[in-house]
Length: 526
Image (cartoon, rainbow, N blue to C red; front, side, top):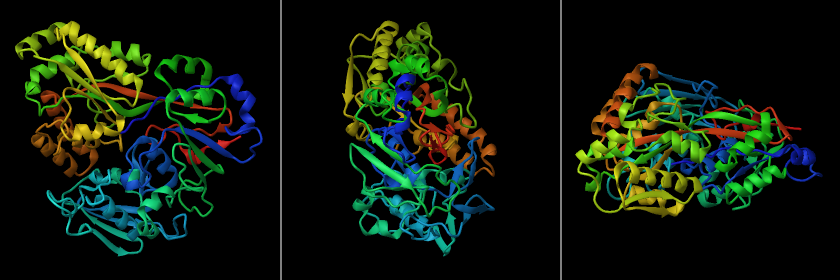
């Protein structure tokens, strides 16, 4: 689960007074800009899957592929990515590319990074994305530690050629290669991984300047030796870390930060009014869901789950909590993903309190206390859960509803360990624009909800094995239909990201397919 926030506005007068400062004071003449984030969880690419860490890593690292403005994979580090059967892929890496320490970027750099990421002994969060490679299972045994440290599907043919054999055909593989979690790592990283995370050595347009200053900032400077496809136009970027959205918003108004994606929901109308054309709305791949703990017998009946879904007035909540900026959803996919269907869920995601009550009664109702589970990461979570609780009380007659508000650091573990006492907030931020990216976590074992998605997963595999992503869409849509029929999870709304900036920066190219909504390498400093 990755969280991307909405972006914040600024007061024009305050910015005009401080524009010469570059977000750092009136005496600063270097062409460095600042970006507001919260503290990342990790910076090693194979272990970075929170939006804050991905934002930093997107500046530090290049990948084999990237996504163009339409969301299609194009070459970045790769000179070519070829296959004849969607199973064996031959990747040629451009010569002359180097890491920030001068090491060459080679096929071995990618093989080493992927083997470390996939190895369950490391417990890195992005190993899942390499699960299609032959030998992944050997690094992830059901019990105990792996007996090998390399995937047999990775073959370094020569310094610039990597042959990847998958366990079965997978037409979406080029999309996976665009995900920052598949970035390469230099040999120097493996001498001391803990030290490496504090001062990552990447291959991207920016390199770290000093070390990660926890809960304060991460300073990057332009990599003078960069030979990739996206050279930096500025001298650097400083990621300023904030404890909360209000503090970031205050600093942007005061001209102390140039970009921010942490706008408080209550401030969205103010941001639109004050920022003008410096506030850009960007379609988002991020979705919020209400997921059901099917491992609890109380939620085994799909009619109960559908009744709860139909009793929720999504539009009213979006209007009240998010000032109408988010979009109510009846699909598991975000609208910017190929294969999206606006009303895939149909009646089960349509607000209809009368039919909801009929289904609720048919299912035998709900006895006892209904727990609604969410983290304390954002105040809006409790706001919309309060609205959901009130609607369930009014429309279904559930009298006893309590909140389980969990520390954000413990939340994912609680869900993965099947310890949620009731329906819980679930979120998904797109890693790459493919239905597979959204559907596989819902169906592939082990599912967080306890849903038996074997039949759904079989359809996903058919989509993966199709000759082209377009041919695979029919199978992905069938898989989505199956999940929505069983309803272990119900879609709520699609985020709409807003990018706010100061008068100190220019050449802002907003893009829903990149972290952090703007191409940092293209930003110029006035």
